[in-house]
Length: 223
Image (cartoon, rainbow, N blue to C red; front, side, top):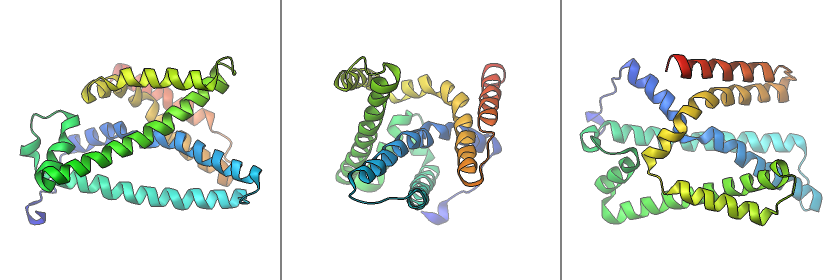
């Protein structure tokens, strides 16, 4: 397998992969997951079970982030290497079919079933977290508690159900133009917030909105 690998690539493919890599939504999801983790820390402090100081929160967040990046890097690099050496097997397939085809080839029917099951469970845990956070947003922020949390949860679940019936490619085509605009700004926002937290960097809004404007202009006139 390894000695057959061709590590050559073109600049256009690399740039396209960099841009299309936004479709993984890892950074966007981390905004929601981090709020859940921080909320859990605050609840533990209120209940007096575990005392978690601000410095300890920062250390826990840093260590867990490094560990998560390491695991994601292994997964993405591994999938990329396997896919690049089996391009003829993946020709003509939709994006939602690529991983399943690779799993069947290398793991067999039973192994592919286990692989797909793990993907389903991973998506389920992500969906549960995102539905919870968005329901909180509807209940507390958007409607100012005018609708109950249960109603917000039901609405979010029903809306998500209808979206889930779209094909994977249809979903990507729907969200990709939006991601091209907001994702670079979210990357800048993350960096600026880290600088603000560690070095009291105060100019957060200007880089964020500037990047958002540039990404919007690029998407409308040059993409």
